[in-house]
Length: 389
Image (tube, rainbow, N blue to C red; front, side, top):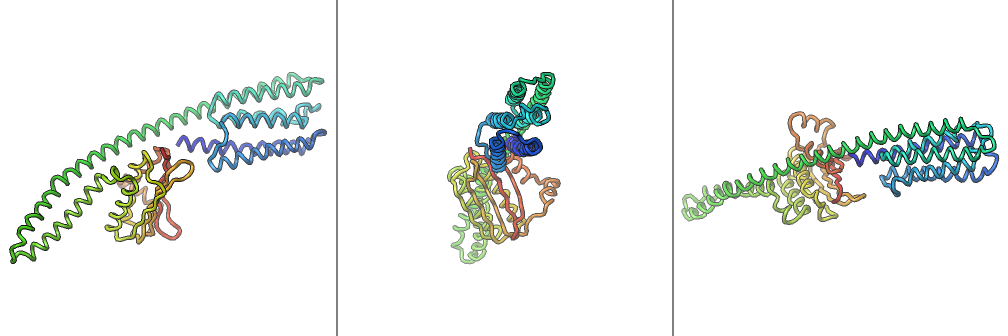
């Protein structure tokens, strides 16, 4: 959640630069500079390109520079534009943009959610305006006007600093809550795994051993000709029971995940699910492991494949584990079944079935993204993208 919040803030910061481009474009059109018009247009074009570049980076979720570079570039380009276009030295004091455009600097910086950076940007913006206007009007100074506008920029800066501090505290609180939720989920999952391991041990040491012993007794009694047919049928039933018990033991305690890794574990899950659901399953993998996310992704895959077996009526299922940019792992499970209604998960949760909801919370608590969507050609696709650690 904090990562998504920062990404959204970076995008809106980039969009706000478009307003600045519109503002100085209108100013150049209404109050065209009498001198250095070509240089003014060149600087305006440079800032427009900077704006387009930040928009592109924001929507690609990519930040090429440290956070302090953005307000510094904004301030440098806008100050140069004001100086070259003559806004600082306008003898009629008729252009509002020379003072008001510097208000955008602390506002833009506040999106970074770093109060110190916002304060520094606002102070530099106020200083740039005061120095630039003072030098530009040194022949006809209007210090009351300049002082009040400088004070106004600082007041806006103070508000932006407070807003940035509030947002920073909010993001920090969200991060702490997410970490605490992840800790709770880890405890819950650990407790669940312990209980499943106990059940697996009980099944292995109790029921499964009894079934195997019964099979041995039957093998000894096969020598009796009159009981052969009945004993063969009993042997078939016990063979099926032992196969089911072994499958349950492996599902409850995924030894293949521990010994073989995530990909063999997913292949084993897919094979088991295909046998029970009577569908064709394939596993595609571009990586061998998701690191610390192996277990969460395994339990998620088990839950999803179980739902496919019970509800999807699918003919084909594809499980894919791939690395994705930037630095993440995507587990995708797609089927060609009947799909899922929009409120199915909400109804399932309200009826007490928290399987998918708990896995979603765990994936998002790890800083990942969990999505469920219907395919255009039919069926459902579940995607889980988690950071690769």
